[in-house]
Length: 176
Image 1 (cartoon, rainbow, N blue to C red):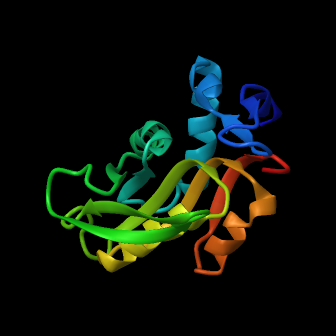
Image 2 (image 1 turned 180 degrees about the vertical axis):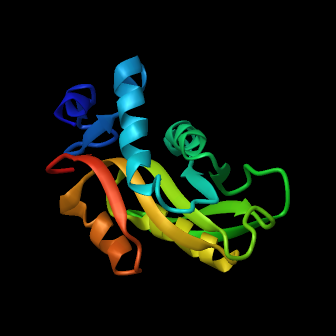
């Protein structure tokens, strides 16, 4: 996985001073890196019954769709408020300065379905936690969460674990 780490571009002071932005677009552009990342994200769940992957907007759509294909299951988009065309349910989550909302279609998850949450990166875990709440409110079961990158100092994996969600990340970067 060190090879994957080398494929991720770090952009200092973006989107604000002091932040080291981990840009996965360079990994996604590399055919071998992309294939390896998708295989690594799917591997822990290949022997589990996963009914659908829920990908969080926007990079979670890219990797989530590919993980769903590899696992032979469906895909559910989790979008920012107002972006889905049908009746939705939403979940608020805290941002550094304010609150945001993510949504899914109200009929996206059949009762009892096992759903894997997928995104490119986990930081504080607020968005992934909101996704888990949406899945559970819809009658689904959160089967786990998979990410390319974990920023362990921000505590997202621990936050999900406190909600009974096992998480898997391919690589970790220290700092934010």
